Length: 520
Image (tube, rainbow, N blue to C red; front, side, top):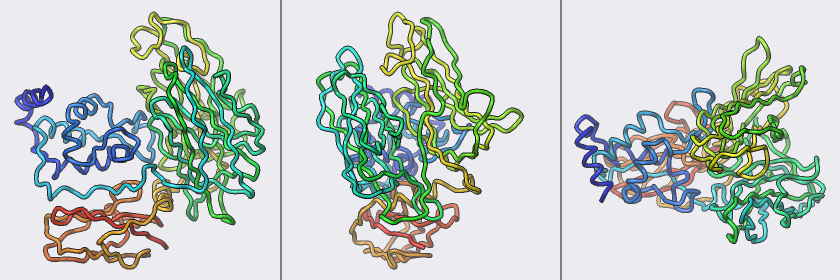
């Protein structure tokens, strides 16, 4: 009731000057595009926002989070670099939602609500080829953070190549982060005793990907002409370093890692590497000061010995972090921009994959710049009064790391549209959905006919979504028509590559969906 009263007051102030948006006419599609990938039943977020009633019940919290730019979470500066899976709201989208809330959340004509994306699994990618899971573990993080490591054999008898990895926390409330490595010789050991196991002990153990709150699965392009992967050999193990924060003592976790492989015998897969190329592991942040740090790779006066293609960037700090930036440079040459996070948020970190791979020519240096606020002005400061803080593994310590996925450069790498290749690759992870919609041919090449169970009216909707929930195409609905044609192009008139898509339709108020596949 308090929020409803607030809406009435807000409506008096601004409502007469705002557009009369409705859920069915303007707002629902924004939630589908920017919120429901996490906020759906079985999704990563705790509350579903798929329907009018679900959003209506959360109206107060939705207003607060959007008005204060807390949701959707997207820390990177989009004016600095462009990434896949951008969750940020445009200024127009934000205004539309806030005006709608201020005007009392009108639903509009429910039967005209656009059809939603189709989400089919509790995990994003579903069942994989290999699942490794840590044994149920009770956090010992009473007065200090708990760092533990688990070595889990793959039991592989032949070489396999990873094309996607999804980390599924067993207890999202206490998993601060998890790093996934491949140990080729199973030399690492499980260590849950001292609470200070935070990294591998062998140089041959290589990072694959990581999980932090808000992270998305690592999905590598896996179709010609761009197939990327990471080899896992026979006799290898998956090595997980888990971090449970202070105060989680007594809570249980059983995190699992779901791995998807290329079929045995797949050729033409380029190997990628991952690691914290930019790092400072020896610094001090004096109490009551704001401190600026820089780090560079490689050290010395000689830059990279060869050219590389960079796929992703993952900046990492703790609670004193204020902002962080990473880029590549060479004196008197153009700067290669990686990431700029002007307002650091410890709770939202991720590997940000670029829309286009970034070429870093030989002779360039990688550089990071970071600012830390160890004063009382930092509301996230874990110490009151502030104390001197050094680099370390605990949350109350600090870190200055920038991870990358990268590989040796090949001519033309920077021209690949990674959004197209990743979206096409996502389709490989989904199972069929049955429904009353008929699609022929399915799979299709240059177009398909979609036959619906009822004749359409102008108020009905038939949309095409990607398997990851991106709106691809709105098909025209004409009175009396029962069959539609989709040519395989998106709203911008660009033909899509191979992949799995969903027809999602709302016909006379009834929701229907059908999985379709495009193959060349």
